[in-house]
Length: 433
Ligand code: HEC
Ligand code: HEC
Ligand code: HEC
Image (cartoon, rainbow, N blue to C red):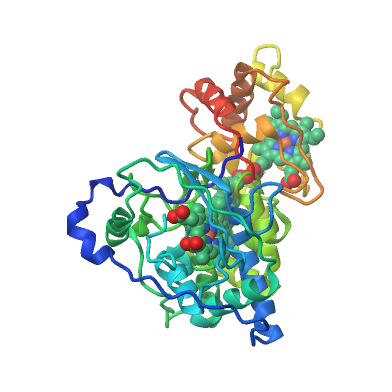
């Protein structure tokens, strides 16, 4: 079964229903008869196409092997299964009869045309940061260029009383960020462009910002790292555990090639963000996003990782030949991994130095375990470069021995209950990214 990203959960059960029934009420917006040749310029439509890609609309609205944007992508939350909507311009089952006003209301406030509240699995809180023009461009693109597909949305498997739409209103009242994008007058235009894209269409915080027990983003800890689909979306701020600072050129390298030589590869849920989403944006936008995050991480482009003693120590650690007769992890590493992750005096693109990479320096071993179990596919990390998975070749004990060895070689404290976590991740539902 395919599963995927559920950004927000629908934990509004605690919220008193009666209290919100007034607030919860949203009128239905009259259906329209679609125009045969809507009057949008080709530039606007092209802009909408780029934004739809950057917002990963199709990733969530297209099930594997299904028609583009026709919905019924299955997402799992701890409260039940959620299916995305058909957002093709089909009049009966899609959004073909939606006016632009109805579309903009859904994108900004998570309210469907008929007035019912949508679950926060649809990241409307972020899309609300977009300008009217950008939302309008996405509407123009969908209405003119996406083929209409007749497909009825499956009902979400959220049990009563969580499925009561008004509870979503309570959730919104408590947790949703309803502010539109506020430019920071003390920062450059480029910084603000990066912030606008990251907070809005690219919704980086949907995965990288920690959430409270009911699925609301903790804005005070924006981008400080969070679990998603059995992975960790690491902190992108100064709280990053990466031993080498993330400078803007490192973010840029990672977000354009799928790998930063000092940090690692974009695998798991980050792979489509980079390959299917950001790749649609012009270079200048990726640069703006990179500069914005480098500022949040408080790094300077002039920081020199080459001369960093941490880097030298990590290269030396990779060179070390621990006594393989007594260290099982070292022995397994030498046989299973070292042929590719070979020792060298220099970093080689596409041959990640594991002792320096984020996977070994995060407080949670989930990403390292996921990569060892399932590898890095062709369409993940660096394009066309693969790492095989060891799911069938190595036992939980083997994998935890390798992970423990790498963690120690990286100079970090041991991860507790490592073998148990390998077992849990091995048996968790396989997410398809
Ligand atoms: C992380 C997954 C995800 C992403 C990314 C996403 N959506 Fe959705 N969207 C959903 C889900 C799930 C629903 C249905 C929510 C529900 O059933 O309450 C939905 C519902 C909608 C609806 C409401 C449709 C209706 O009939 O009520 C619209 C419109 C929509 N999405 C447009 C978009 C657009 C445009 C983008 C890209 C800019 C996008 N979505 C990106 C998951 C996503
Ligand atoms: C769907 C969830 C998701 C979204 C959306 C997302 N990320 Fe990620 N991100 C992840 C995960 C998971 C990882 C870890 C991937 C790995 O280690 O292979 C990650 C890793 C990263 C890393 C590497 C961090 C490190 O220390 O190794 C950077 C940089 C990053 N993301 C930037 C971004 C930016 C910028 C955006 C928005 C444009 C974004 N991400 C949106 C899930 C996400
Ligand atoms: C056949 C060559 C090969 C083998 C064997 C191999 N790797 Fe890799 N590994 C790679 C390549 C190539 C990448 C970068 C993939 C990309 O970016 O597309 C990688 C990436 C990684 C990453 C970075 C992932 C991230 O999300 O940042 C880690 C960690 C890793 N390997 C660990 C291991 C471990 C541990 C082993 C042994 C169990 C191993 N590798 C065996 C080739 C290999």
